[in-house]
Amino acid sequence: MPLLLGEAMRPVEPLCSWFRRLAMGRMDPKSMKAYAHTAVLLAGFLRARQQDLLYLPSAP
Image 1 (cartoon, rainbow, N blue to C red):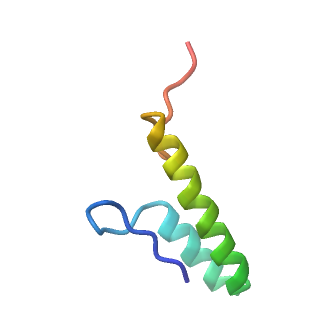
Image 2 (tube, one colour; image 1 turned 90 degrees about the vertical axis):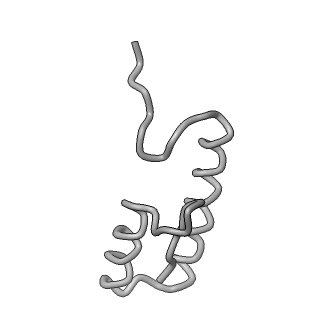
Image 3 (cartoon, rainbow, N blue to C red; image 1 turned 180 degrees about the vertical axis):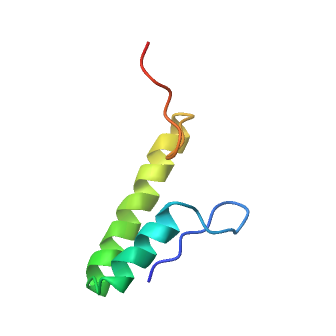
């Protein structure tokens, strides 16, 4: 099961909970690894634009 850690080396929620649910549902480990890679890329993409995975400002 992937464990995504933030800059403070603490688990990133809700991603860790989501991966735990996938693991409990017996998701293929290779699929979870691919999902984790995509989640890390998305988080980096958003961070470079001063956005956050959990908070996106609403449109005016």
